[in-house]
Image 1 (cartoon, one colour):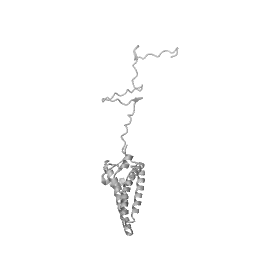
Image 2: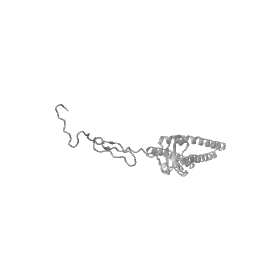
Image 3: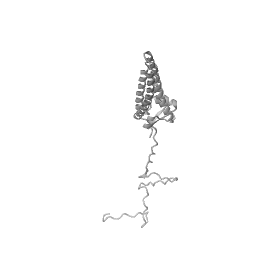
Image 4: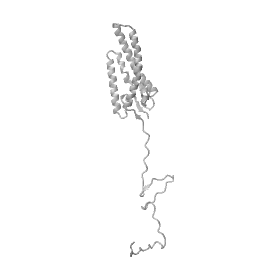
Length: 223
């Protein structure tokens, strides 16, 4: 206040010598904060008289993560090495028996045909039986153990033996070798099945190829 300016006149409703009441709380906006609820919880802080939005809820637990193509390929590769060693031992025994038979001429061709039929059956039974038995009893094969994968049935538990066999049915294609000139067809069919499985694992959002859709199963990544 500059010199020569008279002071403002006193408020006629305020007695002389008394102190005016303090401004209401709430930052001067005239709206007092609401009282706490009866439960005792404190409401979110307010800014300028407006109540702030509550914090977002914490994210829920993530669902199971499907096995990716690379992990599943490496698991099959490991299983393939295991089965190759077992098959090599079996075939070595059969070859030794074939040679010891001492057949010649037409008898040799007859023995070779019998050998091809037996090896085709053994290969199909070995591969299909290994995957169906391991996945139905353990939920995983040796390769899946290494790559931290497991197979789940439709209800989330281990697949049954039938479900595990259905998802690996393409491994039985070599059994076509029991019919003359169809062994090559079985090998080509198995190769086509592998390519289709790889493409569908890579493109399907749930990483479920036709084998898992056929059996109602799914390969899950652990951890």
